[in-house]
Length: 476
Image 1 (cartoon, one colour):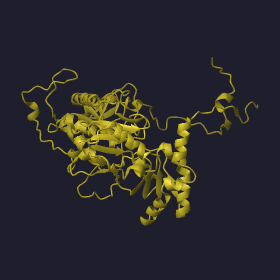
Image 2: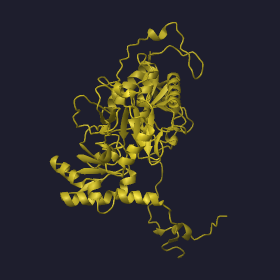
Image 3: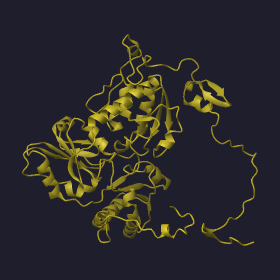
Image 4: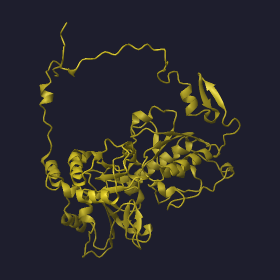
């Protein structure tokens, strides 16, 4: 039974219980004695001075934000200049938030904690991975128990464990052990190595990794969404996850995930109106891939609309029911949102290309980084198909609806650029039957401005205080 007349003291005096294990880990992670080492304040101040930076933004993920004031104060004492703490990130925490930094006219960013290591567009960036406690010997014992001594292993780890695993080796192991080391965009790639996912792999070709069993050392207790980036990239490998629960086979089935993604590709083929979601404004080349997507969509006779909505949620996208499929342009770790609650499907740029690029085939190499789709990238495939190729005698049957699809690449035709008026709103003929016409024909499309028609009452000073007792309440 709820007592609605309660004074609220129970809520005010409530104590949130935190497990002892969580408290111990936080104390090991950061305390008053090691904060300078964990956040590498000496390295940060040296980087600022060497680059002669005047206004520097400090970006923290949510789990490290409580330490931001101490870090900022420590840097200000070393540099005798002011630094700025960036607030809520515009998109994913793993990406450098150049948008927020530019609002402060910053000339550099220091990114703390977990990162996807995708290169930024304009500003110089310093990555400070920070430190999480890690037992290397326990990790080695788990490997020996799980695998045969002759197995080839690929070790991938979250950047917070770089301090413990950057020089990881198993001298008694007969099989090959490849450790991927995270690096920033300015690091030179050693000869005989490749760079992928912001990491260096000690192989000459990516195909050499296909024979390895992958071990992903994760900071999460359960399989996180960022795991998809690696699982799709190594979809033919046995994939294991090491965390607090030990070393176990990934609970997600790659084959089931791929089947779901292929279903979304088929829905994309059926779609006539496709929305391009801007999931980043700081990753290099994002403008180039968006231009390529628009060109591909137009070439196939479909209509595209670009949306800048910040962090995604089902409610934002549900405002555009006329859009059948969204393609998300984001970093590899945030390209696979949990869309189970979304009204529309959300696909990646690679999946859109599989659906619309007649020269690209659905194969074993799954591309999660959209920069690889651009000319010069490892996964670039030029669309050499023509309109005649899509109008041959072979039928194209939708695997979703079972209907025959119309032959592919349409054109805008006559009236391109002309305008029409619907409900006193002007809509381009280019979007006949599309989102523009749909929005214009809505019975309610938002509040009317009526500039100059609304009377404005003089402003008065309101009450002050808190809700349980305003100052002056009860007075005549």
